[in-house]
Length: 115
Length: 115
Image 1 (cartoon, rainbow over the protein chains, first blue to last red):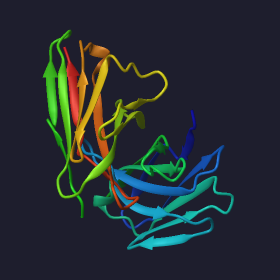
Image 2 (image 1 turned 120 degrees about the vertical axis):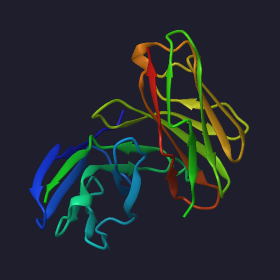
Image 3 (image 1 turned 90 degrees about the vertical axis):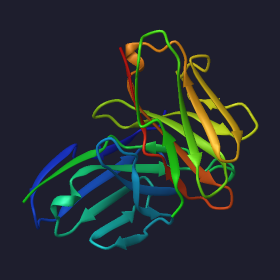
């Protein structure tokens, strides 16, 4: 099946530093999503991107939908300890417009922030 | 925001027994729910798509007779792991799609440990 390549796999940074992670795909997605997952919890949506080239911000988070629709990146500025967690990208490609929920996830980026 | 409740949060069972996991949309109707499985330090893998009032659609490699899915109402889908074995131990997460909106909402997950 489809796979998303997410990198880096893990990051260890100091509080206050900026973080960047990205996802690439061999196929096109119509929607790119970025989620954060805390241990033992379900993923929580951070940012959704619906148009190629779209750049969207949510507080300290910024994400972009690549022009080719095969990639996306997420930036976190001025990281804080509560940013710790696993970040997943996900591609969404509605089939026939009837269901939007089938997601393909990247492998995840484990973020550790040192105070 | 919309809430998806998943129950139980964790369950320990003996090998050979069956376990039922519930996924409820608390404040919206969900014609479609999705079931994912996540092994430690890995990504979420879609197992099946559950549509209210019809049979679930399983992803390739997922045994439909082992992972029974029932979506009897617009607010409830259940996943039953039949004759569980230790290799079925995993984190199971559901998500629900609103009827009139393309947004997805995830449950908080169920950690299954089979002894």
